[in-house]
Image (cartoon, rainbow, N blue to C red; front, side):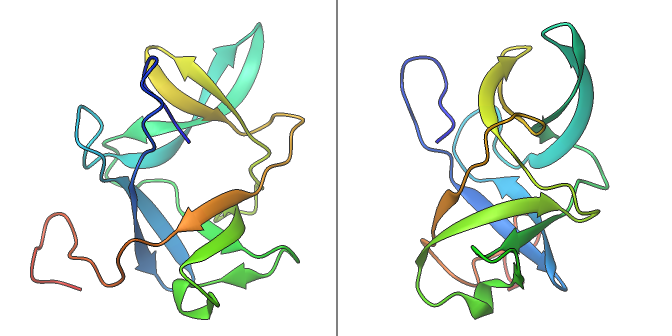
Length: 136
């Protein structure tokens, strides 16, 4: 759950499949709508830290979905529409995450000591891509 302020609004993400990896777009209404989740290196709490936040990068960070045994999954492999998953960057950096606000944006700290499963709740499959409404 990524929240803005005290609203505790869950973000809705669109997972755009590119082979066995995904580019992840924000579909929650607001300033972040249409942006991708992207990796950034920033100074945080006195050290250089990898953060995942939103951006408009033309080549966003790509992610793999992992099951509890660390195997790469695609959405077609998921047994149900609600699964506990883990994410890793396409280049193999597993997200051990905690949440923070960085420069006013909800962000995920990748290099945290905390290992986390995420609950993926699929609302729709084959949803139209943001830039091409007829494409699935």
